[in-house]
Image: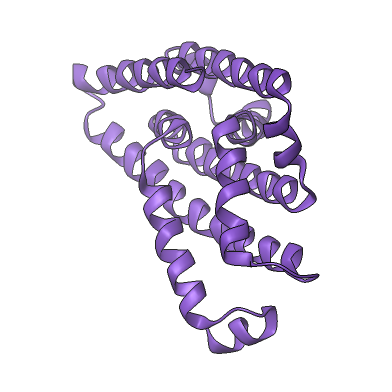
Length: 206
């Protein structure tokens, strides 16, 4: 940790504080978690690929924040509103798909790629994530010519923690689904995940 902090210009205490804040925020339930949970119920492979897709979306937000795209988005209300409605519409689409188990056959090559792509889109189309990174990363990255590099390092760390946590969620939800496969409760979990995504779609545009 000391060596990493020295190389990228961070104090160890700063990195620890950042990681603590990142973990707290990642653990808060949101569209990413609910989507991976629903995908995990369909199969461990689909769930983990979705988790990796979400983590990749985090890297996209990191790049946007480092390049100032998030600031431009915040300054353009029409573009921000468009992104919000696009994200909400996509969550509604995923809520419907979560109930169509035949769409989630993990043995097909198309679905293998689809799980990852959908995970990326779930994260990328969440404007609140973009604005969060705009406010969150600069506070820890500081200022100066090396700030974009430090911001990138922080974004990668956030993505790694996200990938580990959501992969665990996917595997745990799959295990729970297997244990409850012969009960009505298993199907009920799919409906709950779908309903939560509908609610999150509504809160996204508020």
